[in-house]
Length: 82
Image 1 (cartoon, rainbow, N blue to C red):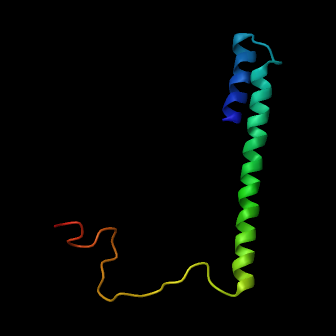
Image 2: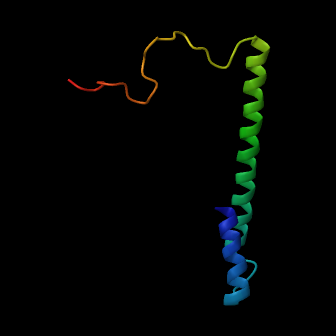
Image 3: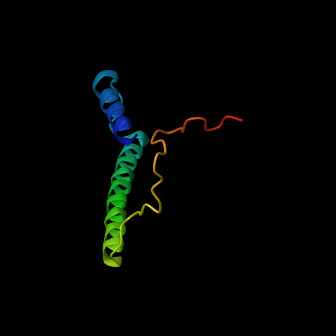
């Protein structure tokens, strides 16, 4: 959203003779910075979760039971019918 707002500010300046310094410019800068922070926070969280699971010596998930002959699709045959 911040990048789109920044593009709008640039287009407004070049084609519509608007002002560079406006509240919209500062909003776009802050929104872009916030987006980068969220992206980096997600990467750090992913690294922490992977490190935690590896240090415990277990998998991220486990299959508790394998049912032979079960349907693999999203809806088993006859499911939901009464």
